[in-house]
Length: 301
Image 1 (cartoon, helix red, strand yellow):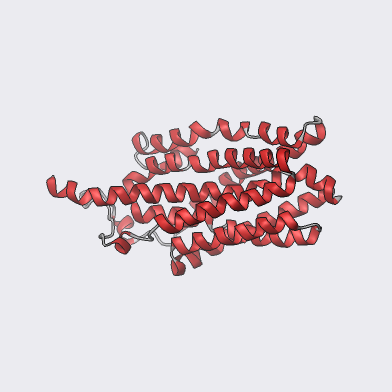
Image 2: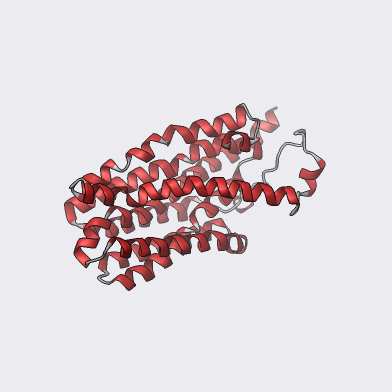
């Protein structure tokens, strides 16, 4: 037991650093993601954009966000999660600064597309980092707590953009977001090694006495069951994302235009949706480990 405790301690301190760095990183991504949606109403008034124009801009972002997430699997293996995160955050910082000085539809669309690619590195990069530093049996509980970053990150980013909008105008919602993410970029650069091996530790592996089936040892491969599972989960996630993106993409604009609310107040009120989900992600992570013993699909349904 003494040997095991000795082996655990150096990992624990680095696990805390990795958890903190990746949690902050994904919160920071939200600062450079949510500003556009908060300032839609004043942006449309200032630049003469219609709701259809705004929808086209948002679609450009989402299409390239999808491409960014898909391609991150390729680049992540070659760059490592740390470099991928720093690259993605750096590009997103530049794009949000560009939004703040833009005056035309096509300029904003161009940088929204680039920002979508950059934002697509966030989730794969953070999850890839955590996978190197936490064993499989820990990941449900760890991810349950860690996933508060996208709930709290959305609330903080929306509130910050709304505050900057009310105090300094819509352009500073973008400038401020870039400054926040820049600070987080520095923190990630200082705190985040890629793997345990990078700091002189052995790779973390699952305990040898854990029951592992033959298929799990050898890998499932692309069997019919895998295809069916992935497609099914994809449809489920599409439904969840459709509702989530519809609400936080348009809620501030809808509240501002239909209820004659000031842009900053509309932004503040729109955070209620994300605040409501804060406890849910923690609960889901612990239940998936403690009750469903890692069989997380049961909880999804």
